[in-house]
Image (cartoon, rainbow, N blue to C red; front, top):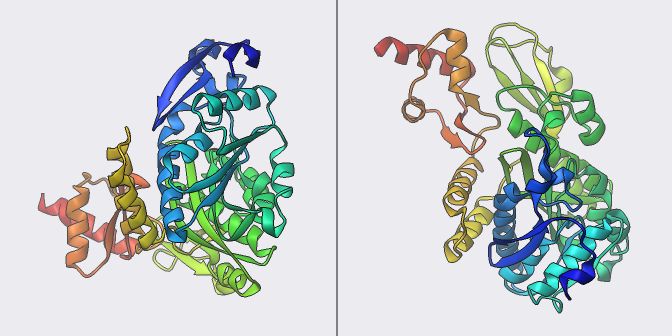
Length: 407
């Protein structure tokens, strides 16, 4: 297929990512002002910043494929120029078929060209349909996919029902959410509309964003009598990402719903509580540390955000390949793996020290002191200034004050 036949009437360029080369819109040609978001201005969506997202997706798909030890089928219903699906077909072993789709006619043409350009026409099918309609057509038992990657511009929630119906029992569903303003509490009403849970503008809002997305998935899946297990998740740059396996059965769905609950937060002393199920009904809404009124986030997912074994499988895959973002990927994988056993939410030392008018100490030192006093302490990928601990906020504040007196 030649470029001329695509009837491309906009500037393009060839980019290399992973093991593939693809034709994409030349983003600099569509920006007139410095503050404009180039990917949304281009006639076909392509975001080079999401290369890290796609790198990790390749590792996750390969780790998942190895758990099945057979060929798998993958669907990318919102493909844009097709780079993600093309990377799956080229870089993930034992791929039987990849279906990439975009409702945008120009994106469809560009994706078809990129598939042929990479000589993957026998492995990749390109469609030009509405994403929900496409997924609905694969809802029958023998037409479902082993894995579906929903990577929209904004919220993935409009595609959840159809994606859940189109995935096989035990299949892997990957979700991206880029609408961080609602998820982080800037637009709480929008978050409630889209995700069915109330956010909070706290220092750990990025973790709340992941838990709101995972919770929305769990509740939506439960309506189809399907349970979810979150095997990996991360918050990076301007988006959050959740990978979950889906298991059919009313009992599985009920078990997932037991992981739903609320987080209460005190904006006065930083105390926070996680309450599962209906235990929120017996709470008086007052902070047990300082007596202030507590704010509520949820309902959201209070279960594990990642599975240690799955993280280790991804780490093993990361060692086998040579990716441009390997250093950052390895750091994310290491931290997420350790966080799989960590308490819910995290503290930002700068925030507490600012309130107490203290100099911010070394994060590593505070972690070591917490462990010495019998508490858990973990660094977190959510923030390079954050730590997860089961120490009460008052205990952490007292420790920071003691350290400040010693220096």
